Image (tube, rainbow, N blue to C red; front, side, top):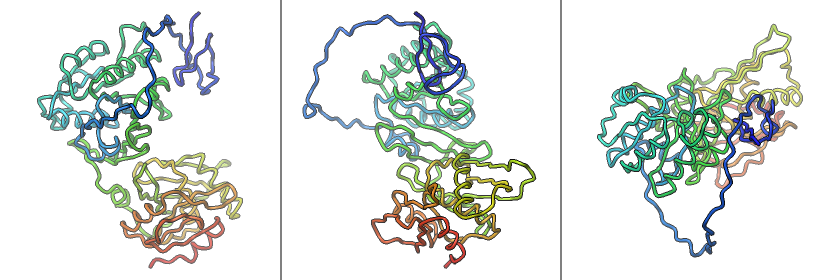
Length: 445
């Protein structure tokens, strides 16, 4: 009996379905060949926890301190890392710089299934990659790549990309669910068998998720997302999964003619062009992993000639923006139904943490009243449906980051928990009406 599988989430079915019952995607079911069931010839014995010997394997440094931090200290031998990002964001640039650094101490195999040797070499020349140990291979067969890896015994293997590779054991086109899973499984076997760390390049779909079956993310040890706007030089490297370090850690890079360079102080760089005292501008402090990051949120509220006013958000969840605007109308009595509202996170950074809610509300109120917020104040706190302002975690780290950038005041939730006295003057608000009242009283010191 043929088996049908969803290319988006891996859900299986005995027949074709127009819509996946698991993820809701349309026209994603493809036929998959059945594999014969085999029984494992060995029966492993369980071992007590105390009998398991721990060995701290030395990590490979990448030459980019931010990348090492996101990885949890460097590349772990035998690990499988998935680097995903949109086309043209700089994935190959990042990996060539990384490979060039590692290749100074030993061979690195860079296998490209999408570009020729000349194309990869031209990019490497532009980036100044000159390590003699950097070995290039233009090959789409995963078996050929693994055979080359066994002969050269590299310190690092880079496969660009997993969606373009194919396995001779699977009769389907590259990029299909079966091919992606088979390629990843074979590469993982190389690493788990005492081989080098392996970095797989992955594509993303139009909605920003990693292309291929969801099981691909479960198979790898680390999932890195590399993102950035073509209109900005900044690129963000973020770990969404990490078995060897903290998840959601991030690093900020600047793309130049000579490749990527880490931004030493991300908060300062993102606030460099800020205009203090401009209506509609608010600064918040979010957490990316363990790193606090100061961002400027801009809001523009204007009268709309449309029956359905626009709600546009860049770098912020549009659904979350609509929710906050509804709470403002209900709890503050402000009229936004006839206004266009635009919200932008400056610098091309994506904000997912609810700690930015309070800054969004403050920026919208500031633009609506055409009155600037205190230029030396930061705002962070989660806003609930009842209009209450809730505290967020690691308030001490957020306040220290704001103090380091010269801010003197912080508008926060009334129940914010701090382990040490605040280095900033705190203005606590329990709900949105209290926020509106405080905004009229706050003054820059």
